[in-house]
Length: 195
Image 1 (tube, rainbow, N blue to C red):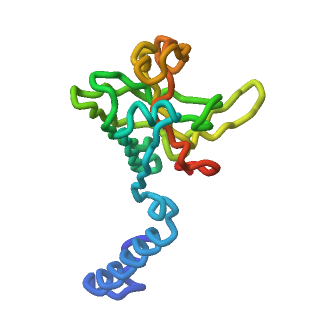
Image 2: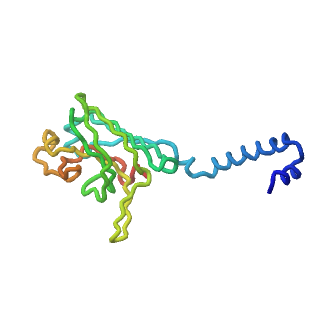
Image 3: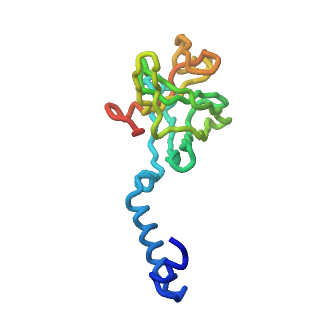
């Protein structure tokens, strides 16, 4: 439809057309907000992690970890996960994973980052990745596994010796050597903190 046809339908005054376009634009914008599923799910949400085991809880009685997820995958292509912790061992590196389960054997996992605490035992990490809809897929078996939990491990197997003496090294770090799990979302069982 040409501008000429539109003017005949609306009338010759460009002012009248403008008055019709403004309500149309407002209505379109309003309907977009109402029916857009992203708008309803785009609010940040947060949750706490707890010590991953009784020995860790006894060793680190003041340990606190808070996770905040900013769902932005629909807008930016990635979400943002913000993890802040304190009450941990000072000057210690931890490896952060999305996991299928928050307790052993943990199931499918995805390594998403590291953080190192300062001299006061505080540390944080911000990760841009798909968090809200994270999954692992086994292309051989065709099985999709949701990664709805968060666990972080001592990145060095020697760093957990004060808490769990003689513990066997794990595989939860980039160099395939880690300590035990330090904090996890096991407090959500039988549910999960991530959708």
